[in-house]
Length: 168
Image (cartoon, rainbow, N blue to C red; front, side):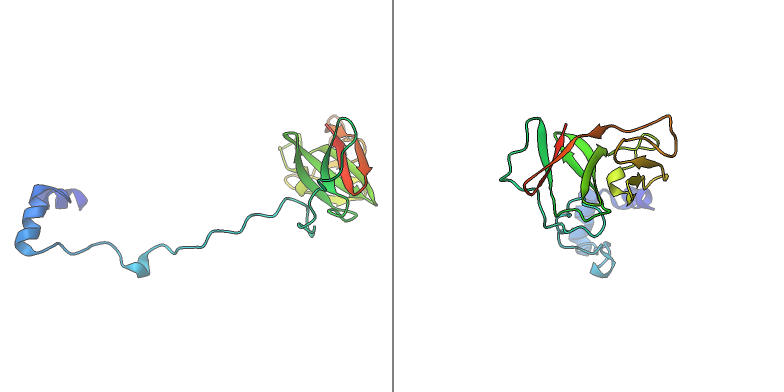
């Protein structure tokens, strides 16, 4: 239909359309009215940091703590309740940090099976389960409980004042 219209009436801004517009008046607007337009939305709020389910997002890593040599501050100690994990990016590395009964552990965030984000998984005891395919990893050793032939990298963790510090 569009090609036939173009052949008969000319291009939208072509000479035939202008001549028809002058002789017959301006062509009617064929665009849909506002009832058919796509809705407009206000800008979305900034996403909260990835801190595990139920985590208070307002608890940021403390800035006034100097970490031990070779470590980086990644979380405030109050950011994770016992039994929670969080995905943090430190030094360009994605890390899964978990609070196991008040003791913090850190492992590589990427599951070797399907590249799932372990920091979005579930923590049960000291085992974190990948949200994609359910592979379980020991937060203390990095060993995979589902496939013993694989594991993820572990990182040393130290608490200094109100900061969780991870060695990269």
